[in-house]
Image 1 (cartoon, helix red, strand yellow):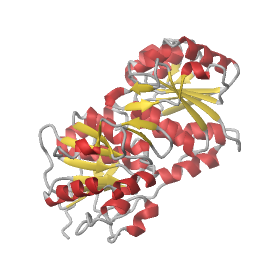
Image 2 (cartoon, rainbow, N blue to C red):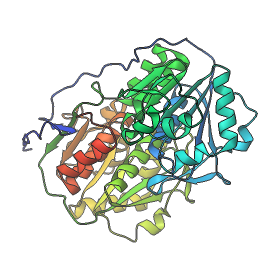
Image 3 (cartoon, rainbow, N blue to C red):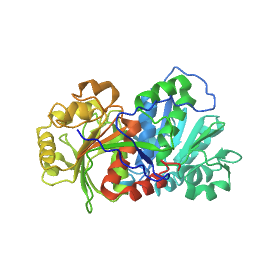
Image 4 (cartoon, helix red, strand yellow):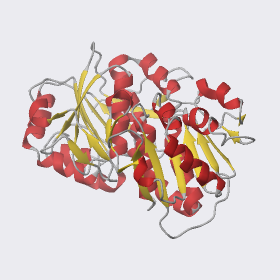
Length: 429
């Protein structure tokens, strides 16, 4: 199979295109501050609102639950279902009023606007966080939340903190602002935005459980060893994917990896792609692998009536198994391939969905490390993101942002991918 080594992009690129096969060493994540060890389950509150940034909320919930934390997702709205940014619908575990008398080891606020402002204006949440802080407990915020909510409540005074760049001036009125991707000062952890959320979440694990647990959790995420630096996309047999207003199908199912699904949906909708989220279950609401409840736009029965410029599968063991068992989805994927139209998958799905149904025949792919042995061709599995003609595959939660941005680049060009990487603070370049 022919291999083309694409010319490296400008130094500002979030991607470095490399020859497939070159290996990169992953290093464990470590926050530079110490934390007390804990073996018991820790209770965590993540409040959400209409207009919360879904990527920031879901990654935080997912990573903390991986560590064993008992995470309660609480809606500050009048109902459990929250309409987050970019059309992502999340169903909370409880209303904030149900949590008012519960003690937590950590309260962590996602950003997004107007979500952060709604969190700020929630009297119950404000009282809870103020009491929590007065009791010396850990609290955290990301993106707009440190300035808009925590700062407005007077909980950032005299502390070093960071937030999304456009809110730094507001934060500076109450805190000493720094441009760290993740900043810890005493019992407060703050971070900058969507592209720093995974680092932020792993740092919260370290604060709750210690460095050993943080490394244990971060390893299977397949996080990049140089967070905030350049990222890797390899391409074989390049073809042009560009089209106006691409229509993209993202199926979800019970057991789908919520981080991967939400990152893909979030990033592609930021790029102005028309993303259709379809449930392969018999109802719109699915329960993802770490028990985050997401609501699809349509059922797959409706989605199959349309044509797509890309069909892309998130991972998660249960979700991949559901995809593989869906005759309608498999047939849709086969038609996509036969029409030479783009399709892709991440994590478990290349090995558990595409491979057994002959959708990788004549193609090279990568997948989650633990399932790569199921791929018939394993020659390029070390690549974090691999494009082979009309196929794109990737490794896991920690490569999801690179995967989504690579899709953006294929459809919209390098400039758009760079723009989004910088806006989301994924690339520090």
